[in-house]
Image 1 (tube, rainbow, N blue to C red):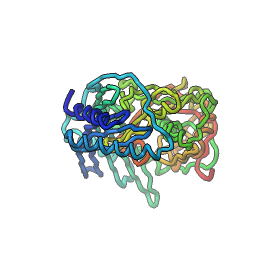
Image 2: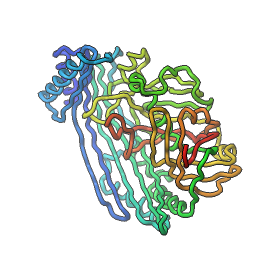
Image 3: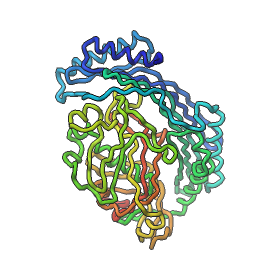
Image 4: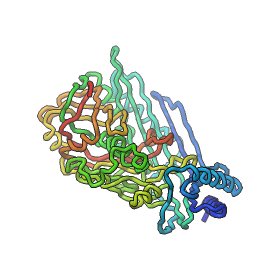
Length: 475
């Protein structure tokens, strides 16, 4: 056991000595680096290290959380005492009693991904080179280029956790990401094109042809140029084929948040009382899991959550049937469910809350060509630049790119492609899914909830064939 583990263990001992029913302590030791460039010049480099201890104390049906960035036993004792006082005060007014339940203790240390090119082993110059190569390719492939911006981000380090049950685990988070955006302009028309890739892997990700700086930069340039002559997307209801990344955002933002059990307990989710109900077509299956095959998928690797619970593969909806919610220990105990390993915090400054891991639609058996053929006439919507998802299941997302399809053939590119609707209608309207499961993660962006942003998550899926989607205009 190292010094940081000793500090976490010390917090547990102090909390129990104060009279706490249960104590959880975790240590985060993260290194972050961000590089940004505009045109052919590196504009900014940020390097950060964040180390600290967070302590959760359970007392008489309430919790208290406190933290410290000072790595001393005295500072940890003071943080634990603060957490205990918060829990003690909260227990007198808490309307919903909190119980962490019971679990078997487990021990696993120094758990890490095997990667070929860990970012900590490569100098800053090599990462600047990735950024500048992407910029150069974008400028070479673009047309009427007004600006090019590129960003690289990395996160790695160690997490240590222990609790009153005797669980002791440590693991090494890892995330790299390269993203590029091109803005092109003719007259009053301003358009953009972007590409990028990220996940829990080493820098060898950018040695792959599909995700090389040259390929992604070239894509961003070409896609921006394509929009210069694209037609505005038509407004109305159309058949649609939704691409993998857009599908992943829908799985996460529009459906996944509705399954987070704290929203269910507080009465905010429309999925209350829906377990066992048919919510979608037989092609609608959504999964949330912590660890995927790193040789095939590029989500966020999360073997344990921030309560030391081993992450589970949780099927939220299977062939249209809704199966259950995502939990931390206390909501699982309250709702008599299994632990799912979904207690997460962005860093030691915050208490763990119910959050997603890697959330994705399951693949089907169609090729892209077969999906386009079945689409016949409609809109092929690709990726998203963001939008809005509401707690009633309604959403509005802007696709980054789109194509109008006639008789299975892409006829012309579209811009201003906006999808609106309800995720519950969307699930019912799924007519098929492609074989290609694609899962990714992002350093820039991530998930936001309760002022905790950005939390790395994975998302994705196959390409989904939808019988009807509202595009543009009014709903």
